[in-house]
Picture 1 (cartoon, protein in one colour):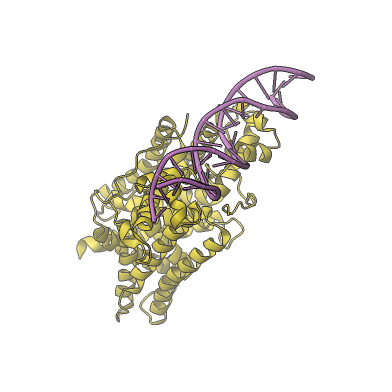
Picture 2 (picture 1 turned 120 degrees about the horizontal axis):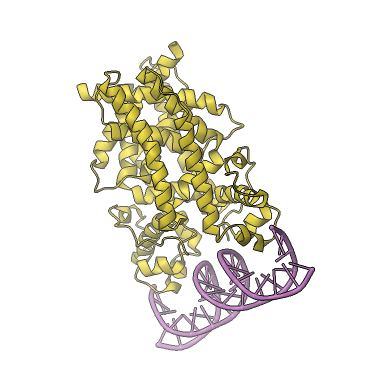
Length: 216
Length: 216
DNA sequence: GTCTATAGCGGGATAGAC
DNA sequence: GTCTATCCCGCTATAGAC
């Protein structure tokens, strides 16, 4: 009566490209195996044997490269949050606040779609981190949140957006990006970029709706 | 270096009201203890001893009322999805499609906010269910999705909404409702009903934005 | 740096008294 | 229907050879 132990998911995801160059070949294989296992089964249901088998190594090899299973999770979530933040920071400032916000949402959403396997682990397995590691991830997350918050409040100050509750709207925008990892598949109807553009329009619609409420 | 084992969360949540009257007092106490533990630590990190201790019972008592730890999870997720679907079905049909959709979103969002602890388990721990139990939950989830899909397509057919990709818009609306359980707290700024009204406006804004994209 | 082997223990589930 | 006691498996992490 054990829970379903599904086979490893078809990792149509380029998470292997997320790892820092400072990791050697074996360490990167362990991270890639770990992200697949954690995404499919969750951290606590994944054994160190699962991870090392996925990497083609013996069970003991994990401890040559990482101090614990939790450290594997930490490096995965850190790389995921770092890469997501980098994607936001690559969006050029631009002049039109609405187009800037649109580009930010498109970048955030398409990153989560393209890296939905790593994103699932990065977003939903944080509870298994040690408090110290958790704090590091929260720090990265805050920086991503701040990017959206700044874009919204600066646009409002410039008169491009209506007055709105920036905290609530930012949370709603982040929800669109994060929650898609529960259902998105790369072999589905939308490419990451198409979904990003579509959701960017929805996000701008939400910003406008925040105004219509205020006016009512 | 184990992961954080946080104390049980302040269960500002009326999940005890979700259980079927067919369960006796001890079984309901186990479900309530289980939902708190699963929400705080996840299914796999929760021990049967955690659950029974939270219910004030000995470890063996669990197996008098449930056949396994997984069955406790199943009954929790079933009650959660059933209650959420009931909340949608209590929304009166109404005559104005926009107001009907608004009321549906408000009901869905406020339910997830009020029951955010049970909702977290219902939405994020489904991977630990047996395949047979998982199928039951997916059936309930499909019925909730269909309610939104029907409201959107009927409104479109009546000319109240612009032509839009109903599947994508429904997914975005559901994401707003589901993802809030990652951050919502009952002692925060918004009551469940206030958040429901606010998100209902955002959802209608998304429906309008879907049109503006089509026209461009 | 990789392996085989295993220590050590925590947890799901059960036995059997009351 | 609740308890105490415990079985026994499986998992994390380590020891030590190569």
